Amino acid sequence: MSDTQHRRSLLGWLLLASASLVACGSLNSASYKIASIVTPYKMDIVQGNFVSKEQAAAVKPGMSRLQVRDILGTPLLTSIFHADRWDYVFTFKRQGMEPQSRKVTVFFKGDLLERMEAESLPTEAEFVASIDTGRKFGKVPMLEMTEEGMKQLPAPTKKVEAKPLPALPASYPPLEPAVR
Image 1: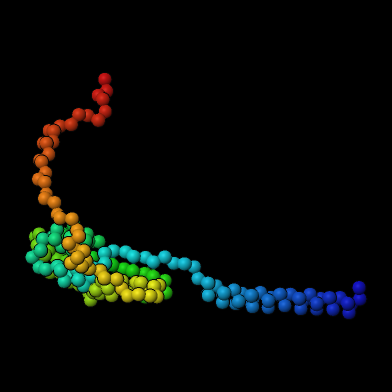
Image 2: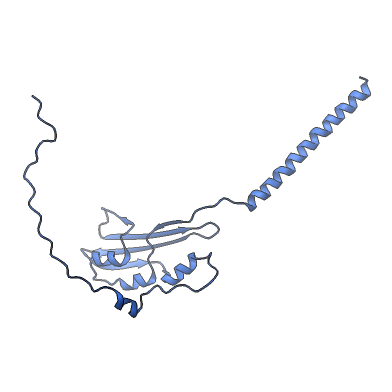
């Protein structure tokens, strides 16, 4: 092989190698463009207790802990160090939307509600409308029961008094037989 042929083949290989590198670079940018269009599904994450404006309005100072729990639900955070405080924290994260976060704190004095501190809370209808972005038709459904619906409910039954439980034994038998 002559020197000229050798230079030509070397030049050919060099051009082929540089063309391959250029192709890889453009392929890489094209793959990034495709990947930015096709994104993986990210599940909606709902954590905590949603407290609506209607629920907050129903809670009044002087209510018992049981009454407050019946209206707002079980608190997300309770602490043995702050036994007179319940925290209701709610977060909602959805792909492509700004995360929602709200906090409601309820303070008790003994067994009675002293006060409630809350950020601005949405109504139930506003909250449903804010999370129901995929639906393109219709209006937000009514979230309250009508008078006709209440009349169709069965009449409440009388509570039966619970019988007292028998006294616990003073001592229990051993779990394992005695070793002899």
